[in-house]
Length: 336
Image 1 (cartoon, rainbow, N blue to C red):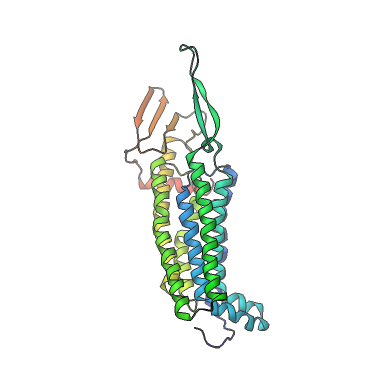
Image 2 (cartoon, helix red, strand yellow):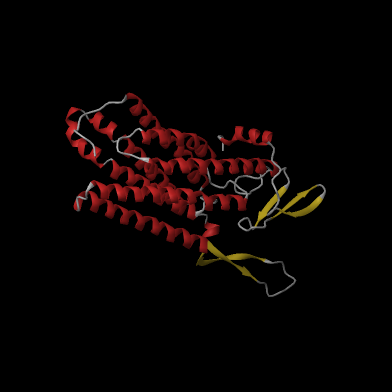
């Protein structure tokens, strides 16, 4: 419980918060732009987006509950300047911005879901067995992946409404004692941290299996992974917060760093195979590389060159990627 409402100015915390908010926006813009410019959200795991959205929502509400006295004090200090109020609410603004920017990825995932993965393709058989095979026909039956994505989006929306209802009940209606507010805030913080731990597991598994970067933005992760350290520090410096408020972002930073390393390895592999982030060949004069069944444990690649055609399985093949190859690829990442 905070004491008397008095305007307080901390130049270091204010600069840190402002820089982090700008950094959050700048770090998410490459991911938003990449999905829109590529007109595809292929490569994202819907489970990753579900867990990330619910985790960031719980973390945001945790900070709001723990700093509710700061919110109430805002009406007292706003007469002395809006800046004091905004500075005191910097932690809440920061985590709310984090939740909103990540949720936009979920919205873009649904809007730019690849059409060829949205509906089931039905095989066509010719009446004459000697005729070449006909291309598959696009049906009106939605795929399992698309139905899963829509279902999980509804789960995110319902989860947010339920948590807001509980938080509003504790803070506005029931006027709960501080101990109960602390208990519910701790529950939200621990839940957020637990979701953050498993949030990246589905995405790590999917990215490992398809062995492609897909629509994931490497520049975003390059900014956010070290930025997680500053975000944790800023939350620690906020009054009323505790370990349940920052543990989520510390965990997410470690897991995101793991995903970043994996994407850099696959980026180097793509350069070696001369394919883009979605498995399409690059350039007219390069060997034709076709990746099929990329979402299975055992994928197959074929390569055509002067020596003929050869096929090899890559599901369990360890990528031959050197440190120098990764460095050479990273110089071109920010141009993608």
